[in-house]
Image (cartoon, rainbow, N blue to C red):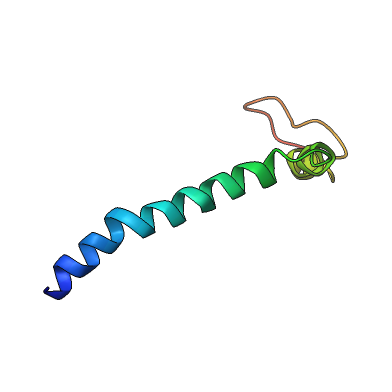
Length: 62
């Protein structure tokens, strides 16, 4: 069997199974119990150092 055929057969069978297991593992890890506070902290991290609201559009900040 040539190299292309061998790699194609591998990709169609075991690589597909491996990638499916990786996808399921990542989904389970992201949705695991107790991870909500971590995701909430990551979502709000860009606002952590805000001290005042932004100036209205078209105006310069003092």
